[in-house]
Length: 451
Image (cartoon, rainbow, N blue to C red; front, side, top):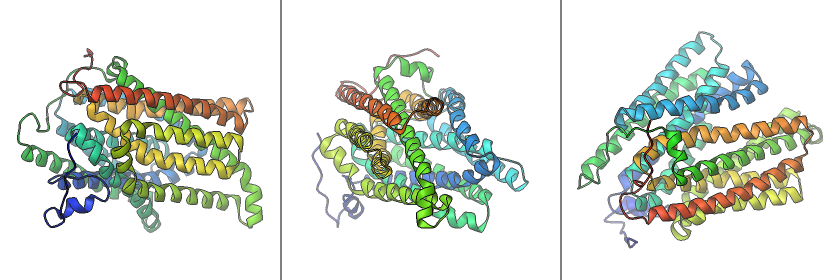
């Protein structure tokens, strides 16, 4: 283990100040700040577009259409991930990132033109935003994982993640005043240059790392990836396979937890709204506002001051297990006392930990994989597998609605799945430890798969 470097403010002022949020060594501040700003811009753009899509889908199709469209994203992402892998095998990484980013930016200009011309965009734009968010964020973390070594990533990813947390809050905060001054289409045309700016930062980081690293072996590569189908790559690598199953179960649990909370909220709304002398829609809106305020506020605090310390002192394996253990305790309490207050606290804790500690930990787990896995397999796991978990939850909800399943039944299902999540986290942590300590180039022992 590399010993900690003690910094002095006079010699390294920026690194010294960043030490409050993680361990930053001399010369590392510029790149980590550029990466944090990059993901800040991506999350800001996403939350602008997330706000823009809601009135378009709800007024253009309704809540039921929105639910069906969410399930349809998993199907669409199969083709998106496959095309991404095909393109990654034919162009260099920087060309890949530039093509994908500029493609989405140009799409926004097209949506803006269609929108101001009165063309209905509800379902197409909803599906597009779901693909855009997952693909671009996964691509960013692939680039970050290739920029850093395993040792650097464990120290610096928590600081990079600060940009993600603040970007989510900033985008949601900006969206309200902007949409009041214009329309959902205004948010689209503002998000487009934000994406172009994020591409500029990616290029700047790539050039800086290529210039500052002393050996050719350490410099970031910009060649096409090797051939191979991403789905087959995951199936033939146990580390990636366990990773994929964990993400599937995680999203199944969180989406089902969201449904149960919404179900309890809708059932409670008429009586609570009457007691407060407000409309049920107002009560639900205020409840959700407080709910997201708690998640976003606690998330920023966690990312700033807690995540880096947990990873540093407890390690990635412990960090990986903490989130499902917290969920296990929460759903156990909710099953024993199925009250909306108990479940709200459970979901706030689960979501806060998932968006901060769990997300940072999962990104760090890619540090010990090959470039092919970082770009190809990561796209599949972070896109298709994630949405597949959402879709499986939707299937269970659909079945439950037609078989009169109770709130306790759904909570019991989540409790069982959370136990499986704990086991998968333990297994993945063991495989990560074995891979991190294996001799030779990181991730190069993956079984090659023919296209």
